[in-house]
Length: 246
Image (cartoon, rainbow, N blue to C red; front, side, top):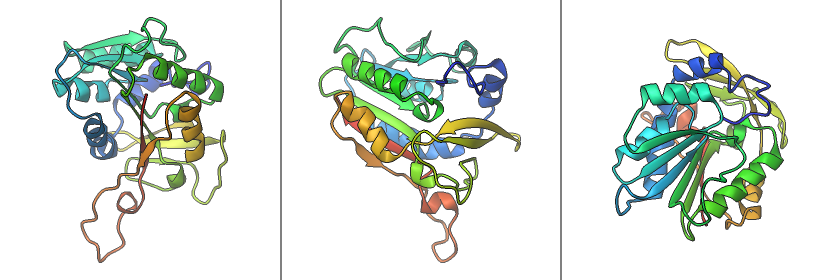
């Protein structure tokens, strides 16, 4: 997770412990398969992918488990990384603490792919995110994919089974704070701060860093009963997945 001087506790021990127990059903169905599909197959486990803002290591474990990637999983929370190392160890994953801004240990054009899931929405600082996006572009090989998965701004205020970000009926503009309610596996919720950004703002982060305008995917779950009022996740995408190539 990325936060500005940790004002809402994203990098705290308490937040890491709660985040460990989050209900990930929607992310597992909508984000994980889409990211793996868009990365595509590779030549073998010597290919390097960055998982930027890895949290407790859920995506990193998916990437390593394919056998196609060696993963550097980065986060600015030592507590998140401790959980990731305990819960999701893997010989092809190296977990690393970083400052959320720079990738200065990596050479230009040295990385085969990068993934960043549910990170931009946790950072209030556009300047830091712009710099990080530029760093990601710098380290990727020409043509390498960058997968940026985040909250769908069009779904602000919509109640999904495992999360709701923003208040129903509220209108948000770029930079506004939105409370996010995340369901935990025991049925309770945790509340955290997220930051609204329009799709155009995400596009700008990418294009100003040197990427082309991204492809945008808005995955939803198939409706079981098309004749009835479908659940929210069948009608509107909780998440969006942007794909751009260096």
